[in-house]
Length: 305
Image 1 (cartoon, rainbow, N blue to C red):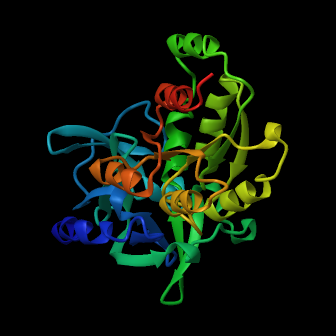
Image 2: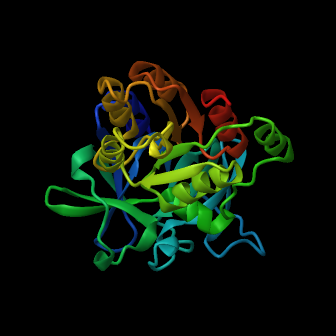
């Protein structure tokens, strides 16, 4: 499975930038299907021996050696309210990379990869009972698939960082920015709170949107608004339901009334591919999540005083 996954990632990357997502499907010991973006998966392994860490967070099943690096292993089933997998010898390990850090997730059954059109991914209704750790749902061959908000899972373990450094706060104070409004677009409530927290420290007003469709509608709504209500900068996640960040950036650049807007793409998926796509869709900057000082510096660079 690991080799097949790694060999096919390059093929799946061709979907990105066209509002399509390649997801790896898995189960957590129950029939319900879950999915994770393949770009976040480094490797798939059989459950390795785990070293238990006294005093660790309850969702940390232990640590393991991954190619000479010690990484934390998180019990994905326990994180989503299912029976824990930490003592299940048949479990699999998803080795993932988020925001330049690596960790493993224990899952029960690995299935296969699927391609989903962005418009088929929608925000789940609260009545479905997934809570805030699932940020999108879709159907594959008639079966409901829940896309895990891994950032939310990680934030429940590590907390939500967001304080600007004293050095950056001094830079903000010396920038003499006039009042600004920034549109923050992200399907993760945790990520929206992180970015909003940074901008509050910069005395910048935020307008929030959950996906590219809502963001574009908000921008159109404010085209003829009073100058004090207009958006000066868009900070957008890349992978989102309905319309992803690449498609949103393309739409902004194709709209004469919007194309002068500054756009920062902000994603937990880092790497050369993202940088190439940023240039292709004519975004102004790519910032890997979550680097508060780097995000703040990008705003200072793109919104001069």
